[in-house]
Length: 157
Image (cartoon, rainbow, N blue to C red; front, side, top):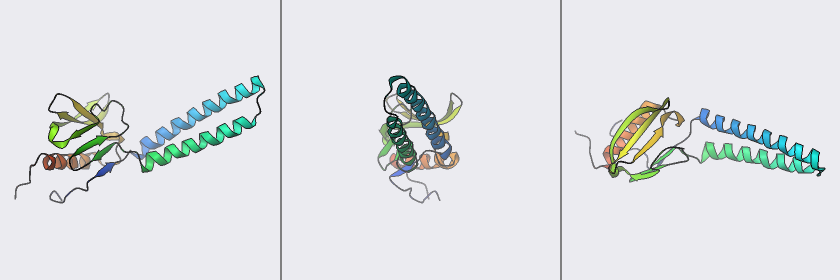
């Protein structure tokens, strides 16, 4: 398996639990917006049809967010020349070439298991492994292979 080339580009998507959490938070936000909208309609005497439109737009937004997180959003896009980090807060460097990576290490940041890619110029990229829809050991092995290939190292034998 170590000699099999990895697919490029390859998107490492968000874990299902992470996607469900974000969609759930957006539903709570929609409920708060609807509560505030109802209060505004009750106090100001605005037509209540505004609430139906607000609810329709909000529900469409929640479904759109869920679809985007499930089908389009990625935590990490691994390309042949480098990587791109998606919408991950606190990731550090969002784009770099594999040849710029001087060291890769696993660590725990605020209780979350992460892979840290240290770059040659003292910058770093932090990827939360728990947010990925892939087994953490498989992800680390794939990153090791991508780093070796990106830096021109070939397996012996």
